[in-house]
Amino acid sequence: MKRRTLLLSSAAAVAAPSIVRAQAFPANPVRLIHGYDAGSNPDTIARHLSQSLTEIMGVQIVIEPKPGAAERLAATQVAKMKPDGNVLYLMTGGQAVVSATDKTLSYDLLRDFDFIAIVTRFPFVFTVAPDSRFKTVEAYIEEAKREPGKLTYGTSGIGSTLHMAMELLLSKTGARITHVPYKGGIGAPYNDLVGGRLDMQVITFSNAQPLLKTSKLRALAVTSKERHPGFPDIPTVAERLLPDYDVVSWLGFTAPAGLPPAVRDRWHDAFRQAMARPAVKDKLEELGNDTRVSTPAEFRSRVESDLARWRPLAHVVNQS
Image (cartoon, rainbow, N blue to C red; front, top):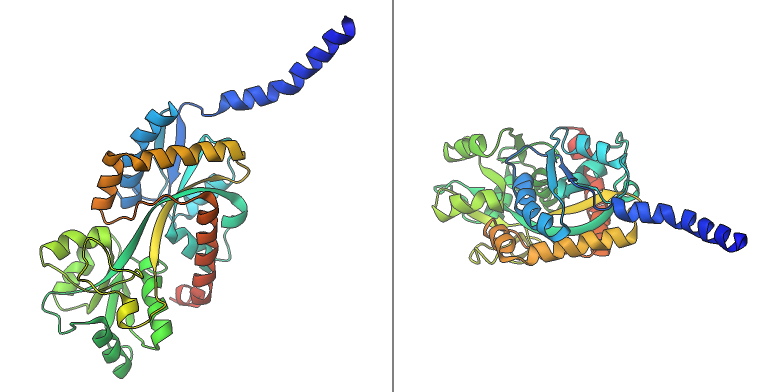
């Protein structure tokens, strides 16, 4: 009898940590950390998703913007946190650029994060002023080849995915165009563009849409392999110049490395359910996003391919 009691007690002791771990997930609230300002596109997407995730998971989702250093601050913090499923990190394609070009980082994307799901993908647009002399992207590149360094293009900053999308094009065409980085949104580059002080602007589709619809901007090309369904008349760079050119950024959710597979799968299912809700899906598609949800393996593969793509262009960032 004593032996049986001892065995039962031992079994209970072994099981206790598992029970505690199971009860600890999900905690209330769950922290969702990202590296952008409140009101930014990633923050907006996180907030659109949070209500549905709260309903699906039964816990409050607290969004914590930690802007600064192109996602480095947020990523550095999350990489050191416990992989218990109670902390999520909203990662964007820009983080792959940072990780591919900055050798001083204390974290490694493939080592320090577990990938749950990419939830949105979005292309960029090469835009000009409505009265610009450039009618096609190839005309812009051809003039740049004839007069190296004369033409300009603007983006949201050095090392941004927008910057790298253009530099990838330049590396493949041999053209040389002067980059003009801006801070503080699209207002300044737009004013310079329509004022004739900037030749071309690389812009996200969500920011471009209202300006394109009202003819305040004109699009030369979209960076995705296929034309955007919302603007089927805009050609792709692949059609006009480079058949293998395909640059699409993304937004996905990760967690500190070491996440139990069952917890990862539960979060993945929650994101899949949330993204299937019309209130979420329709709103994000209105902003120009592709809302197909990736698997964890597809997410990791995408990060690996992005790192391989951007590493050869590290000198562009480091010499700017």
